[in-house]
Length: 65
Image 1 (cartoon, helix red, strand yellow):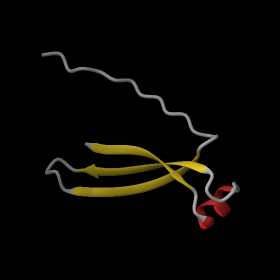
Image 2 (cartoon, rainbow, N blue to C red):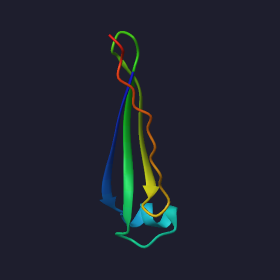
Image 3 (spheres, rainbow, N blue to C red):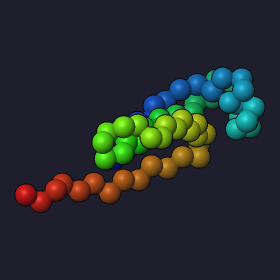
Image 4 (tube, rainbow, N blue to C red):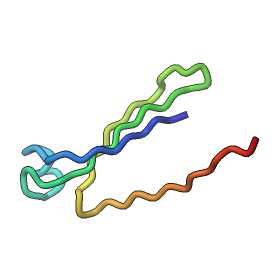
């Protein structure tokens, strides 16, 4: 399984340089932790997206009992 969160932030100097945007421009930060079947974390990631170039889409399903 994977746990993923997205939060809004302001770009610091290095992030702004890398994304070619102004410092303190809005960005979205994705943080993820992926677990194996024993619930041991096996992957972590942090991804920063330009606020003007991000689209989030999710297909949500409820398990059938």
